[in-house]
Image 1 (cartoon, one colour):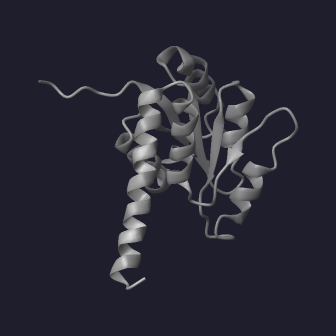
Image 2 (cartoon, rainbow, N blue to C red):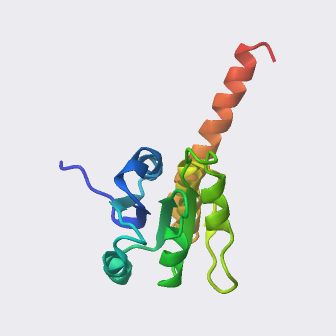
Length: 166
């Protein structure tokens, strides 16, 4: 029996290929939950027309949530959010300049009317979990997988505490 590929529901995009090591954590987390995703490097500044095409065709491809990671000026999440009413989750990429604080402030300071949910600097895993939680609102099977993920996480912490004599 052939392995079934999950339908792509989350569009993961970052400003450049150098952001892949951070953003691949989002796609891996989504994959572990059985949520299909696609990862692309598209600069909001250097390739705005490509970003337009990516966002414009995303909903027809099944995308329901976006995760956007960028560093420095980090306008990608905001530009993406300005082009869609689908949820956008921003991931500030760590930078050499200020450890990613510049990225965080660029993403979190969106103007009224163009919201972007923002996670911690380098927080791609949490972005993936938030995207999965949004999707789980209308997907009971995904909700059950998220519940199991949380239970496994708690059990692991309790086991570590028990092994430490707590």
